[in-house]
Image 1 (cartoon, rainbow, N blue to C red):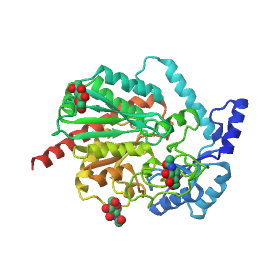
Image 2 (tube, protein in one colour):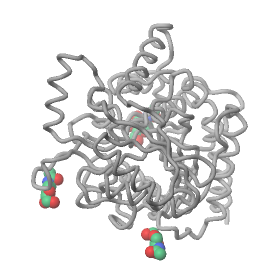
Image 3 (tube, rainbow, N blue to C red):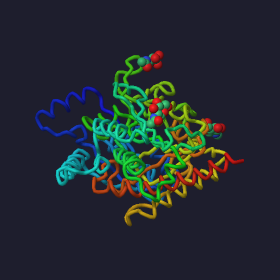
Image 4 (cartoon, rainbow, N blue to C red):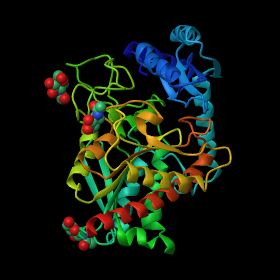
Length: 430
Ligand SMILES: *[C@@H]1O[C@H](CO)[C@@H](O)[C@H](O)[C@H]1NC(C)=O
Ligand SMILES: *[C@@H]1O[C@H](CO)[C@@H](O)[C@H](O)[C@H]1NC(C)=O
Ligand SMILES: *[C@@H]1O[C@H](CO)[C@@H](O)[C@H](O)[C@H]1NC(C)=O
């Protein structure tokens, strides 16, 4: 979802009057849509492209309802289309602006109620994360190497950590590569990346020593820093990058980074509307941010055993390909995904959905140019999209849940790392 520049100007002007940070979302509502079957899902997906509505939750037929954000102008048209198709719907959130203001109050209360929380217990800013990565690298030089992949479109360094008990020199070890915040608004993915660093570096438990002895790690907490910063300052629900190319369009900024990879590019689950949340860009790897992820994968391709591209929300572990073709090692892919999902479920909240695992196309929807598919395509044996929980809150998960999500997800990360390591050793001993 994107707004015309003129609307931004109006909102900017109004904000000096009404001082509402999220005024840009006033008049936006979220509808729940009941899905009976795959064809209902398809109707919704087509409406996303036709009307450029913002799907918050794709839903699963007869399991959970889809959630869709619409503007006042589009709302009637959208509901008419649902009615034409006999699809039940209801108002889930009357005013998105109000709900975002409430969420902001929750966040500031959380920050004020205790000031000495760890970074991973909050939604930290880009600058806080940057300082943290620098500090960890300085404090643990024998374990951690900080790498600056290069500048984002707007010039922010995209930094990641290599974590290794052998300074990345033991080429018999597999590498586990985790990245987060590729989609700017999926804030809860960032604490999970930071908590992973915490458990590996700052607070390793005895029972987890094997994870460092046997495996090297790469953790890239903020793939899309420009989008992430923009989601803090201006549009909380921004998903895309923030690139701008006047010879392509002056109307909208950014592309969907998770459609920008060079695999089946621009073929499925994409929109050629420059302002769409699934606009893949003009060419594959048009974005510096996706090029950095590509380079990390290719530079380490002989050793990366598992790539985990972390998103939110929906409680899924998904694998390729987005066109519904299954990779040859699908049994193993399925095994590791199931192990990850089941490990997380052992710690889940009673009200949370169980994890669902499967091919991303068959379990959710068709896509092309995704990071998950790219990893699989260039030879990472286990390449996944992880969709963390949103409970009923979608992208605005209350901070009280962050620790829960961090610790339960860590169980899945550790379990998948161990099993992928076994597969790696088995393959290399043959
Ligand atoms: C780790 O290896 C790099 C070269 O890849 C080297 O510059 C660095 O000094 C090494 N660090 C330690 C702690 O040995
Ligand atoms: C802008 O888009 C044009 C047309 O697709 C392309 O040739 C050019 O390289 C792009 N510029 C940048 C800086 O990416
Ligand atoms: C789906 O994508 C994969 C990876 O690019 C490719 O190998 C496969 O042939 C594609 N399947 C179809 C039906 O196009």
